[in-house]
Amino acid sequence: MRRIHLIVEYDGTNYAGWQRQANALAVQQVIEERLKRLTGEAIVLHGASRTDAGVHALGQSAHFDTDSRIPGEKFSYALNALLPHDIRVRLSEDAAPDFHARFSTKGKRYRYLFYDAPHAGALNRNTHAHSIYPLDDARMRAEARTLIGTHDFAAFAASGSVVKDTVRTIWRAEVSRSGNDVMLIVEGSGFLYNMVRIIAGTLRDVGSGKLAPGALARAIETGDRLDLGVTAPAHGLTLMEVFY
Image (cartoon, rainbow, N blue to C red; front, side, top):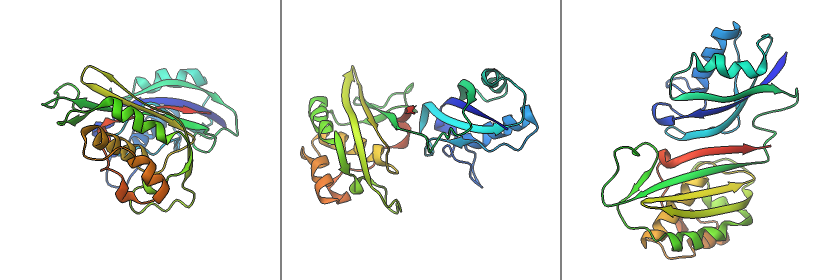
């Protein structure tokens, strides 16, 4: 058996997230079905991140095992000829037998986009979360810096999360503005379920004045989810890159 590594880009608008589900269409299922058409094998695709419904990816990483003799670099071309236009394989290559898209990761980069304007946009409705309230990006930028370092992010996990170890290391957390677009970039060793969306929602609430500065630091200290803002909508989030 050979192991093939893929980097996948997708618009998550029409999908119930990455992971295959019983009663909804997921990105994993779509790619697996195309791989079966190519190879004749019942292939299981392993992804680095289980992105939620509506979340996008520019650099989702995945792998699968196959007996196919298709050259590793040719899988991207063959798959893209079969996949819908909102899913693209940006790269395919042979991988080492011990490579694992999920368990070999060293970190991830996420982007969150806000559209700061009185009225929601039409063209960016699937990629930007609209903020009707003006955002103070300088205040958001200062707030984001408090994330840097190794902390217990227990307060940043979605309700019902069963992860035992909530300590994570964040080495980049930046907020920038270009016109009406306010962008958060966050990189770290790993993220709890909904953690980036909770960070983004809290930064938005600090930037709009709904929360006092220092909310992120307080939540890290207390471990209390109530110290943070609301969870930002899924469609503003993009998985940019997985690090190995």
